[in-house]
Length: 75
Image (cartoon, rainbow, N blue to C red; front, side, top):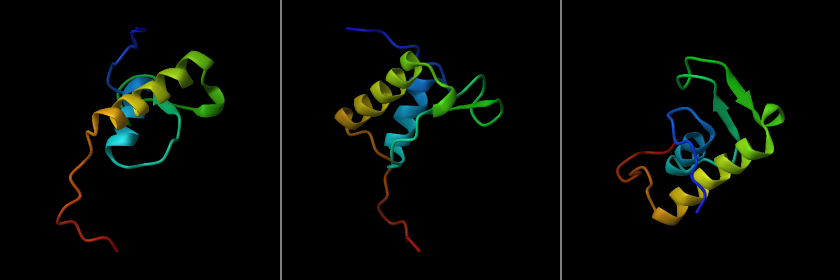
């Protein structure tokens, strides 16, 4: 089994977060702290970084770890 760097803001973490918040795939990550450092977009990512993003997304989907949407009104 391959081990991914799961640091906050990294590709694996961002994939898992997109899944958790029921967002679609949008490969990206942050060089440092999430939202407080340079964001790296899909076009700038290496193949390994993209693979880590999708692994985080897919792992979270498989675990079913989703933000509770119950009681929230959607407009």
